[in-house]
Length: 377
Image 1 (cartoon, rainbow, N blue to C red):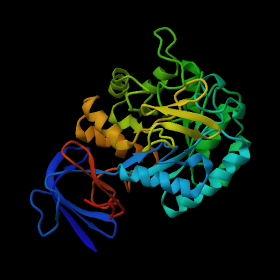
Image 2: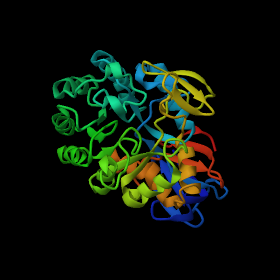
Image 3: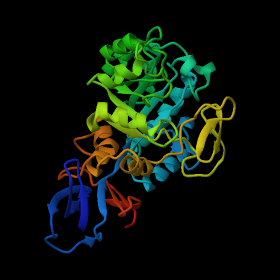
């Protein structure tokens, strides 16, 4: 079955043009400018952008990935899909080895279905002093042997590990992760500049929510932020919700890293898409007030209630990104991080028809995954 989307403002990383595209068997077959060569679904000049790719997401709509409950995971994916995320990574939080293995084995089933893009272990190999919303009782020193068992439990679908490089055994665990095809991300760390560089040299290539849960920039002690921003081998996550990081610091990071090394993430937890109230993140109780998630005890920020469409709009309105650059940091660059840029992340012939139709004010009007509307235009 073939479908033509006509009278659209198509946003690519190269620019925005009035045009059309055709879809067949779940893939984009042609992208053209001007009037469509035949009949099609007219979008009335609305924007069409590639589906958002979220590499750091703990849940939504009451569903939580760390539980390993498949119904909850499906609920979370559906919520974020309605907000334009067509590719989702399931992020776990620190837990005992058997809990992590059990959750990974369960979520691997949804990876095999194509519902999830992979599994992210955010912890337990993180710094106690920067653990944020992770239960400090569940943290431990990195173990290559233990992590190899967790990778095995995930049946080839473990895609990312957040780790503090200063911990004993961390560098060997980073090397093991990279050898297993797992992205090593530096985060929740007390590392200084030199230890961060050591982690990068060992193979780490991503910064987990830059600025958050790490020492801050100093002019004599630059710390991990400077090392991660300055190294061309590293891509940086940013949480653009107006809570985690001040817009001026987001702009600073973006100016240094650029669209090719910046990915916007939600770090969403189960409260995303719901109202204020009491929730759970792993073993930790969370209270959401005015849309901000914090630990019920201690008050540390505990993930977010962000969705990627909001992050996209804020990138344009608050940070001043062009539409092509906003597309790159929410779609193409995160797809590249996951090694999927050949099939998703941009609007081009041969790629999956993962698309979001946006109104003139950049609200989500419709979402398509693999050529099928999940939200009708």
